[in-house]
Length: 83
Image 1 (spheres, rainbow, N blue to C red):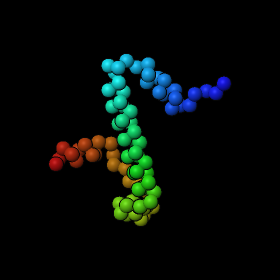
Image 2: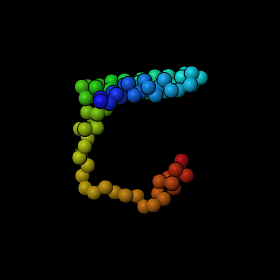
Image 3: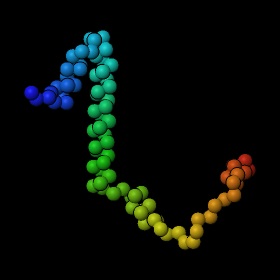
Image 4: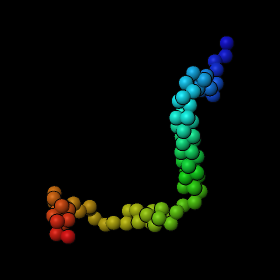
């Protein structure tokens, strides 16, 4: 016997939900779907059209010389107090 598809299992579960809670489920599914669409669109744009900020950042990669200089612990906090 064939197992039901994911879509059919989802429909079966939805049919078990009380009518009074269907609006909440609808909202959850609707916004989940919108989030997926937005993520897909952003991924498509990011892979197809490099942004100016991305290309500027890429051009700076590896451009420093020497070792990174670390400030002594608490230096940042001291500077913030002076401002």
